[in-house]
Image 1 (cartoon, rainbow over the protein chains, first blue to last red):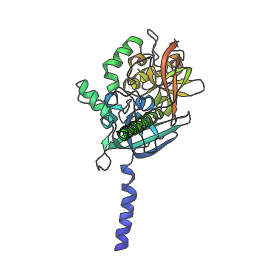
Image 2: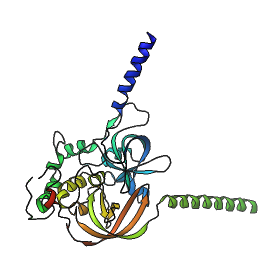
Image 3: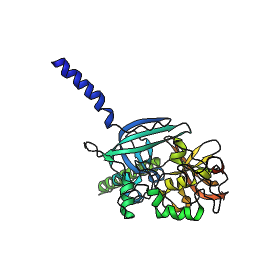
Image 4: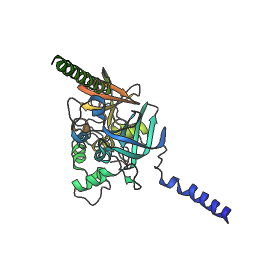
Amino acid sequence: MKAVLFMLAAVLAVFAGPAQAAKEWGIDGEEVAQFEAKAVDVLCELTGDCPPNCGDGKRQMGLLTDDGTLRLALKSNTSFAGAVLDLVPWCGKRVEVDGLLIKSANPITFYMVQRLRAPGDEQWINARAFSKAWAEANKEKNANNWFRKDPTIKAVIDEFGPIGIPGAKIPKP
Amino acid sequence: MKEVFKRLALALAMTAGVALGWSAAAQAAVSESKRVSITGEIVDTWCNVTMIMFAEGSAHYQCAVWCAAGGIPVSIKDEDENVYVVLRVEGEDTNVAAPSILKIQAHRVTVDGDLIERDGVKYLLVTQVANDEGIVNLSHEDVGIQPFGK
């Protein structure tokens, strides 16, 4: 009976574990990386020019690990959106993140935040703060296809066209 | 009385020493930079580096505007494939969806600025956009609009 229970537990552990981890994208040089760090304003960290609260969403954010490594937080779970609004509430504080560390051959290294939480918390927060903020700011129910509806983007595309050249002939799909 | 002054002087000297030490430590935390002139295409860092879609030139202009407006850092990619993440443009105080760089996605530019390299990233603080050639990579002629079409 003990052997059966042990095997059952082993099988459950194998199948339950990966479901909790960050989602892999199959990008060259990516690795799933979960770690604790301090959320910082990257420009402040590099130059000493430090506005209050990491620039309140107007400055790119990074993750400073205990060994002094600075990781640029480039992307969140919202389509076509960065991770600034996910990390600003943690400005100057420790946060645990889960996501993808991407070491490109270019070479450039950066981080995609997929979920985050206070160290020691059980509950993860999905890194989709941009979606929530965009829906609230634009009085929409959700941020589905936000990039097609955003007024700032619409104004740029109206002015320059979808290929960035005003008046250019648009290729058929 | 002399002894009191001596101790006071010693205390002041120690305080000044500690303050100077702190100051030096604070300065050491600021990364070193060097002056550079970079010529390359303004790119959407995420799509371009990850190569999850075609992300160069006019074909990707619309998507690059989406990503820049969404707060993904914008970079300049030179002919040697170096990617420089732009953290400041000519004194602008924001580097998230910065208006000055939003419209000129996919443009070929030459910029002067300060380069700071740290932990696998080349950060660029642009002090002057010396030349903007507009979009010279007319990739839409070969691949249409990427992704999704118009």
